[in-house]
Each structure stands twice: as structure tokens, then as C-alpha cells.
Image (tube, rainbow, N blue to C red; front, side):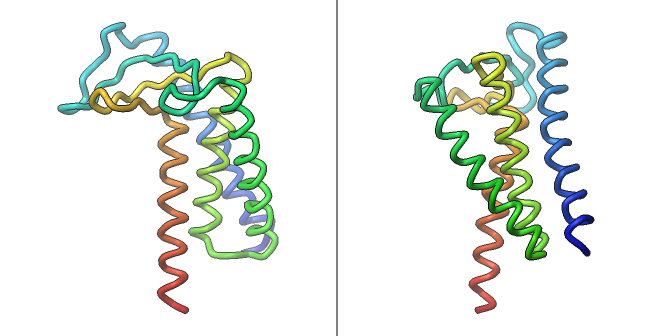
Length: 151
């Protein structure tokens, strides 16, 4: 595969994550009942407007600054992996990170908050972008473990 075809797949993945996150939140705000909908034991769909950072712990300015730095690093690494035609798993994992980051940072910049929807117990709440970021981190861990096992 060439740089161009690798980039098309990754850009489509990034755009798909941003679009899926926005559409999911649109439908949730329109049609989800205020008290939420239980999916499984301990997992509920319920709207939570997170005006603070991760887990509601950080102020907005620090969250945006940290997110911008992470996006800059992940984005530059994403470009580098595509130029060098590195492993597919690495490219997809970085695409998940960049897509989730763009979705969360964009929402935080435009609306001053993120909308978390998937409640897991009373511990944490996630959205589509958070799940993509988690998938990207797990993919990077798997890639690094796999790369070390072949050294």
C-alpha cells in the first residue's frame, strides 16, 4: 500500500469516529429519557454534561491544553507512520487516538463541555470518542508487546 491509500483509510477512520460521536450525542440529546436506559447490569445510557476534565477532576483550561499536546504528539506520529509505511496496527491505533481526541477537544472548544453517555456503575461515564481513545491505547499496547516479542 502507498502513503496515499494508507492515509485514505486512516482519515476515513478518524472522520468516522468524529461523525459517529457527534451523531450519537445528537440522538441521545433528542430521544434519551432523562433518567436513562439500562443496557446491562451496571451499564446505563444516561446524559452527563462533563464541564471538567477527565473524570471531572481537572479545570477546563488544563484539559484543553493537555488534550492539544496529546493531539499534537499523536498527530505528528500519525503522519510519520504513514510516511514510513509502518505496521497497520500502529496506524489504526493512532487513528483511533487522533479521531477520539479531535471529537472530544472539538466538543470542549465549541460547547465548553463533553457529553458522556455510557455510565459504568457509579464510577465513570464514557462517550464514543472515549471508547475510540481506549481502543487506540489498547492497540498501541498490543503493537508494542507484539513488536517486542519479535525482537
